[in-house]
Length: 436
Image (cartoon, rainbow, N blue to C red; front, side, top):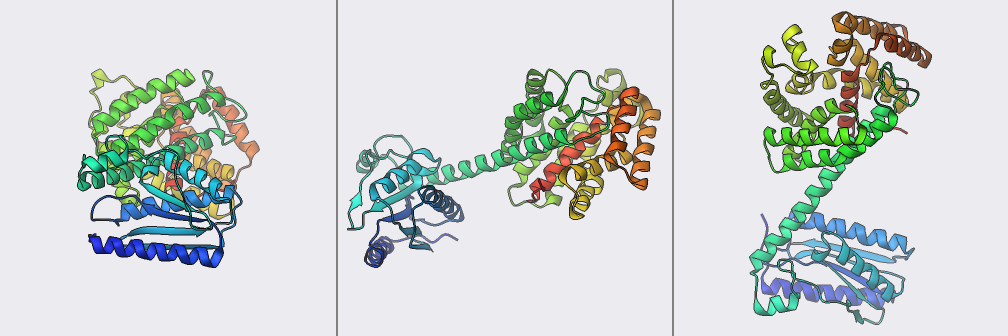
């Protein structure tokens, strides 16, 4: 529970801070940076405020590293009266002030940072321009004199700024991971029947550049899916975002490069946003299954079926990507992700690990892309070929020969490739880094 501060608490903290500054000046005879958070109202410390403070500390440290400025002393204080940090820095005070003003003026949370600079003789360096009001953008002193906004309004605005900033950072990070997973899948070589660095497999309308263009175009979509989840937007809104993403894909690649990934990774990004940064895998997959079930329930009647997956549902009872999502991505969690972790734990390179995952998926997945191109007989043949390679061992030359066979039969295990990308994404999401 947050503890409110009294006027006496504020005055005592200010006196303590002044004494600390004087001690630093006496002991180090160097300019100082004094960092506090600009938070109105009686509550000066919350977990969100401290998180914003930690980011500010890292920004200052990074600037000092760039300036190659020695820091003989640093202290910080985290208390109900607020978060504080102080640096003694062996650097020109004027240069320090310019760098601190850059942080305040350019960072999304900079308006909440008070980065004061003192010269070695104790002189406070002033900023060149007056700061503006958090709420209306007018000069802050004018708003303060007229009491244009209440302390609670200013506090709530600061909290909203902090939440928005970290939500945006989270969405951007997840979008980057999704894009990275798509690029890693595309670059993995040799992939039988699929686009890779050597050739376009069984595809004549796309190449590696198509996949790179598509992955870049889709990054903002994945970020948007996370934000939809954060705001608990429903599956209908996610579906509409997916339609727009397909338009962006075709505009960028002029081909169906990532339709399956738009569906699967979009659902996962939405679930990640919904469940929050600290969610566990089981919670994430449960939410994804809920959304996947919604899309599965939309499966049209046989008379209205349009896509290959819809026709296969009525012909063979296969639920395809919708069923995979509705199951909580069971094939990924039971086949692909364990295979990836196993291969990497054994010291395989990233590329070899991804190829191992792909073969495992090809051996077990009813791939709608294969069935559409080669029927159930082709699907069974692919499964047998993949199982044989996994049982006997394989070389890259074996995979290249299999690619030649796939091309002759016009087979492309696109569904397996999509789930490979999903496995890589979840591996990243779990906080792990893949080897280079």
